[in-house]
Structures are given as C-alpha cells and as structure tokens.
Amino acid sequence: MRILLHVGMPKAGSTALQTALAGARDRLARCDVLYPRGPFIPRTHNFLIAGIEERKRELPRLLRNAYGDRMDQIAPAFERWMADLRSAAARHPSGTLILSSEWLFRLRGDSKFDRLKDILRGLGDTIEVVAYVRRPSDQYLSAAQQILKGSHVIKPIAPIRYRTPLEGFARIADRLHVVKYDRAAFPQGDIVRHFLESFVPAARDIVNAGGDHAANTTISAEGMAILAEYRRINHRRRRNRFTADTDRLLRAIRTADLAIGGDLRPRLLDPVRDAVDLASDDLLWLRDAYGIVFAGVDYDRIAPPDGPIRDIKQRLGRVEEICVIDPVRRDKLTMKTMRVLAGDGASFVAAPRPLQTISLWLKARAGKATRQGRDR
Image (cartoon, rainbow, N blue to C red; front, side, top):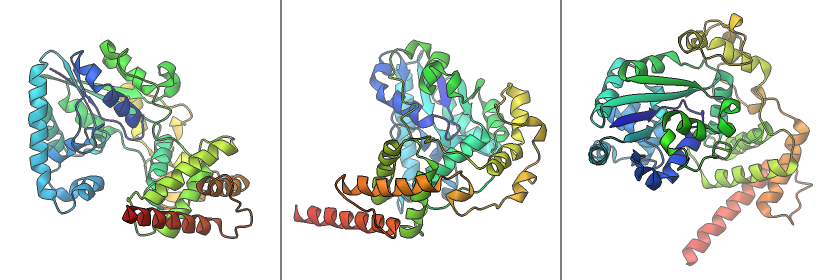
C-alpha cells in the first residue's frame, strides 16, 4: 500500500484539505483510497503524535487537556487505532492511505522521525510526504489570529523554521513533495483541488473541493483587536481554552465585518512583517534546496534570527502592535457587533464601554441558557 502523508505546515490550508477528504471518506474508499477517521479529531490524524512523543508532557496541550487525568489511556487508544489502520490497509494492498497531520511539522530529533517511519512502514510499503510551505509573515499572521480564538496573548515574533522538519521527512520518506502555498497558483485557488490533481488524480472528481476559502475564516485586524480585548477582560488567565462566549463573539464579528465591508484582510505593520520574513534564514535553504521563492521577500536582506527581531519586542501586548488598525472602522465594528449579538432592533449607540457591555450581554445569555437547561 502507498502511504501519502500530508504534514501541513500549520496555517497552510490543512483544515480545508482535511475537511474535504473527511467529507468524501466513503466515496474515496470505493476507489481504493483510504482516509480514516482519527480518534482525537475525526477529520485529522494528529493523534499520530501520541505514538511518537515518549514523554506525556511533550504532547500538544490540546491532547493533554482532552485526556486530563486519563493520560494512561492514550497508549492503548493509539494501539487500537493502529490495529484498525493495519486491518484496513490489508484489505486494500494496492490502494492509497492518506494521512494528514499538521502537528507533525513540529517534530524535532532523529529518534522521533524514526518512530514515525516505523509506524508508517507498518501500514504500507512506500511513503510519500507532502508539505505545503507558506511565506513566514503570512504564516505568522494566520497563526496569531488562530491563537486569539483561545487567548488574548499576541504570538511572539520569531523566525519560521522549515529546514529541520523537512530534512527529517526527507530522511524517512521514499519521496518528499515540498509545495509553495500559493492560492493564486492553485486550480480555482483551492488547495484541495491542487492536492488531488497532483497526488491522487484518480480521486479529483470524488472530493467536493472549494473549501479553502471557507475554512478558518479570516476576520479583519479590527475584529482581531476586539476579540483580543474581550479575551483580556473576561478570560485573562484562560489561555489556549476555547469558550462558548468567545465563539459567539467571533461569529458576530464575522457577520459585522461583512456588513461593514471594506478590506477584511489583516495586514502586518511593515517592521513586523520584515522582522519575521528577514529573520527566517531558512528561506535561503528552501530556495536553494527546492526552488521555492516567496514574492515580496527581499532575499538579499535575509539575516540571522538575532538581526531584525532584536529590534522588536519579543512578546507584544496588543493587536495594534502587529497589525494596521483603522480606529474609525474598529469603533463601527464594535457597535455593529453589539447589534448582531443582541438583535437588529437593539441600540447601543451611547454605550460608554462597549466591550464591557458585550461581556455583560454574553454572560447574561450564558446564564439564561443554563437556567433553561435546568428547567428542562
């Protein structure tokens, strides 16, 4: 069996690809292409990390939080999953097994890659690895926005590392495909279509593509600022914890963003963008090893990581310190978000502290939902 392992990188279309493949799981199987369910997050195979990391404290926090005081159940769960995968692979000896885990892009150390190789060799006889790589500043901005969904903390400025994981995958794979994440170059701007046409052409008409624009929908920089401040007020100590009230606020911000209009794409401040790009000296290796060049990056100015980053705070405090913010649009977006949350008939024009008003409204709604649940 052929193993086709997609490893991200994070924030480079992984969610869209995984969602599309998971939605076509049954149709794919009828064509000898397997995309199995994952035991942790069904659409992904991030649980592979459980068979690679030997020390529980090195597992991703999301996985540790999911198991809590049942950490001893991770190893048996992993073995059961592997047994199921081996059985499925045995029924399709000439087929393709697709696995997708952006968490694997964070692997460091030869021993961990060796364990991954042992896992994959137990499932098939050939291993192909696919990695989509994104411009450092774009990846940083997307990751920073994702973090704000569960924390008020701004992602620290740091270079993006490509070489260590890619060299590790090259060492264990029969073939490594490194692809520049560039929606303008993908068929219909979609990573799903690109992945299928490039690596599983027999399945390109089976999977419903078109999800690259919908997954992990971007909000404006002004929306990021509102979200971060709300989390700072209400969940200052709850980092990397997703909450129902934050989810409601995020949906309202997205609706309000579209209603107000304008350019919704966040843009990094020039010094921050340059710091991330020019400190990511792995870009030179990526260019020389795989011919990948990102437009807009001045490769002649790329410096070691302690260069441009040294002049910017390693840990920034607010969205305004990394993104271009329109204060007038932010105020309009705040008021529109309040109206979306409370209903179109509400009026909050005179609210002196709008984020505190949003907080009180969401808390009241949460309390009402709790009371209704008890009444049932």
